[in-house]
Image (cartoon, rainbow, N blue to C red; front, side):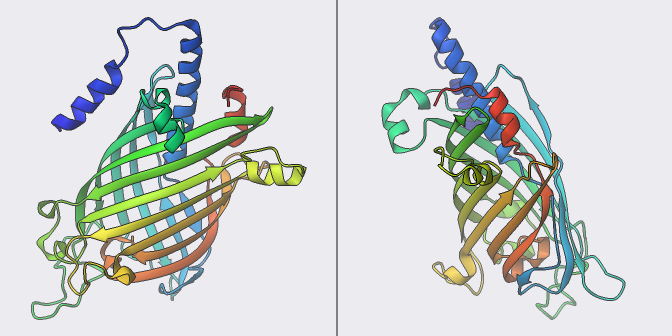
Length: 328
């Protein structure tokens, strides 16, 4: 906690002794606009899949995640606080369409820009011109309090009533660039790295040795046409599209898995989203996921899923083009 507050103070107070020039004020305003745009891009979206897609999951009618975001910030600042409670369900393709035990996930995240980043020629050359860091406290559970295993003499997990809960700490750093390409188009590029730590004492004893308490992630993302293409349809398609590739590695004790067993520890998560101009709040997505199941106590399973469906449109590139300046 001391390190967290030290980072807040340093990034907030850095450079306050010098009086900014008008040019610096204009640049700072543009950086704030880009910062808020990228914070919006970092918000987790609600979605609904159509069936279970192509996967090794049990047959589903749909998988749905409700992910409302409560966002606290000010237009003239480069910090933000995000509260996100989530509920995720899987509706099985069986008689009466039963719902698997819901997955509850909530996190509180603090974002802050790294002010010195865009003044460092080395960092801008190595990554992108802007950067931000974030820290989160999260909780993931299934809302059950029964025994984790069925009976006293078996290691069969009770997926219906078995208790699953874990609390975690997450830290991320992102480097990004946002620019206006044409009068009505904006593009962004994003590099992100982070770690997720589940302290053993923050989880029930039954899962401490099988969950994998340390996770490392890296991601690349982009949206919009980075350079104006000759074909109008290509510009328009890119303007309404976003891509993200995330790779993860689960470290820590996982009984039955060696420290380098990629089949159980590697996570691959690929998203493509299309934001049609005729919808303000709805987008279409295609996702490929391979790795540890992200659905509460089902983490014991290794899954692959190629899914598609509807998602919320929180990254409106057309609106962003209106308020982001022409600086490239």
